[in-house]
Length: 313
Image 1 (spheres, rainbow, N blue to C red):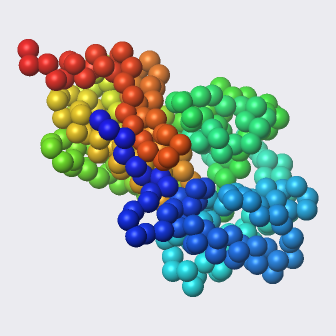
Image 2 (image 1 turned 90 degrees about the vertical axis):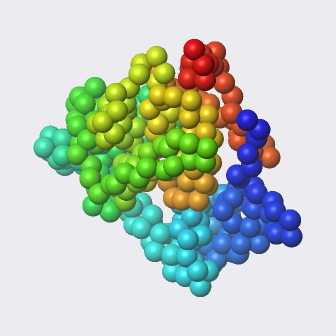
């Protein structure tokens, strides 16, 4: 399979995409940065604006991706209000008391969730208990709050029962997350994959429940010798395919495209990549080049799966 361009797209007679906020053109991104600087000023904050974040006088950082993605999905006339609403919530969270203070064991048990994050989005990840779920994706412990989500640092986790107990309860709570629906996505050339879509910020984190979740949803039995494909484009999307036949090649291509679009055009990005597993960890099947093109890379184990499903014997 040849490389497929998704990020930093450049079409004939069309302005190129911004390098850091790739769903904007260069000029749109500049207008966004100008607007966010102005809104900070209206709220009484002087900030230094960088390509993908801002830093205030106290050294606090403000990432742009999520609010920029929200603006991208709205008319430009609504950007200022969208940015203001976002910044007001972020600033209020700085002034709010520590959400972990005063928690009872019952509060913790009800609110803790296992959650997946893009590893590169977490500053100083060693300050938080975590484990690698897949290349570039880490599992952390989240405290679900009415208007936001807080992450357990090592101190919080230690006084609330420790990683193992919290994770066990977090997985149980993840299983109970609702407000999601399944879509079967057909692909050109035959075959299909499944997309779990939902408003919950924990939707993509249900990847932690695979392959059982996929078997339960589809009624299909996993073939351990073949495994499954999986991707988590953003926090509201989880994609999978239980491998069974020669449509694997077309399905993989379709998932690569779907995942890249979901990652590059929504708040809460998790990973632009597609992964494969046979139950012994996840192998990353895609690579992203500097010019924004995705390509398939096949290791020996997945090569054996391809040969098995494409064999005529």
